[in-house]
Image 1 (tube, rainbow, N blue to C red):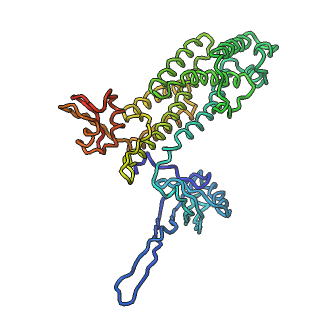
Image 2: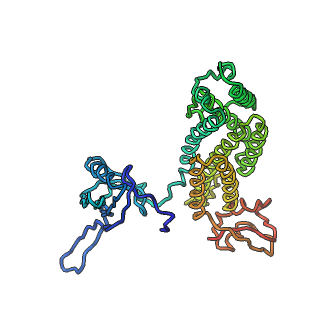
Image 3: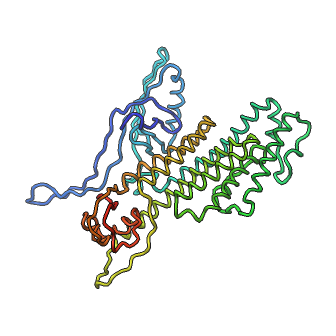
Length: 431
């Protein structure tokens, strides 16, 4: 594993400088011996608990912290070891050997870590993000809303100075005008609150005939009833109404995301005069990333259906034809990469506006990891030249593809009549 792919070594909340001394992996084998027979019948009963021996180093400014670490290791609860190469492991610590010198302020702690029971899901090789890309991005989105509120408050403090504390901490009634709820503030602060009120009023009236879904992610996020919370919450709900407006375009993911991008950009441009365009741009990138994660999730679900149908026999045991279920079109690798590139461009624009919002970087990493993983499973595509008109099923067989691939091949060519595929260039999958 390359150095840039290593995890940060940790046990629970303690970051470690460590090296692996020994890694023991044993099989649990049942051996059956028989009279007058050489050898034995061996049955593999699975893997024994993995035992890892590691050495942790504490020195100079970190020396005193090793005492808290050793004290922590006396508890009886299971431990979480984040190994630099193996990732997250849960188990127990069997033994601890400590060598330390107060004079030199150095300490070495040798540990023997035994991994706990591995569930069936953990044991099966699969990548985490395939079914969970939306979960990770949803978490980043929720964190990002809090970070956006903090970003707005930081900008307000830079603009208004000490007066910002009172303005930002005042609990407001969202149903009433903002400016009327503040008294005794300076003209500069009054102008700022007035612009915020105009901004909120404009966004509240945007697509006001569309109702925000009751079961959406925003329904689970609580925005504080402060000026910053009202502003960011209003932006999020407005962007969600645009998502509902274009919901019928989800069957064409590229068009759906492009429509969102255009509308979000126009909304940000319209708010240049109020000074809140920055927050619309950042929130737009967050929302587009969230919708991209949903599209990737739905596409993987559709792909699983296609794979299942392709492995289903076309005729039953009596020789009767079984009509296949209809399938949705799945994204090609090129389409996935194009969608990812577009949303990462949006995220980069948002990061340029606010370097402190780590959730944006986490979202970009989640989406990239997911795409890199699914590209390993997506079929590679090549273009072939056909000389004659022929059925698409026959074309599949000609290039060593099961005839069940016909629907998938058709989805990347958009052939009007698959029974008479015209001569010329045709895209096919490579097995």
